[in-house]
Image (cartoon, rainbow, N blue to C red):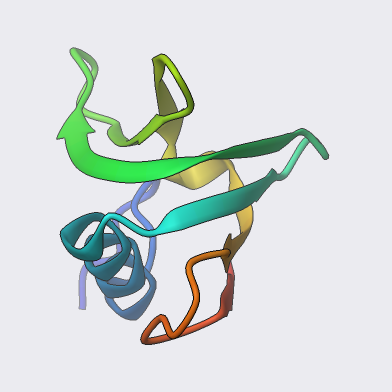
Length: 85
């Protein structure tokens, strides 16, 4: 089995994809303690091949998936409530 550095586990990636698919409003806790809120928009690759979550909080922000510590869904009746990375 090959394990790549700088890639989150598949099951965690699935939660991020679902959040984008449904446009969930998220509260993100980063590993450095920073808190961000915004609507999940997409997952994109940066020029250096890192996967980035795009959220919209009035302006679009790109968050490295490897920087995520916790993702909380603020949207009512969502498919899930919280994911810890």
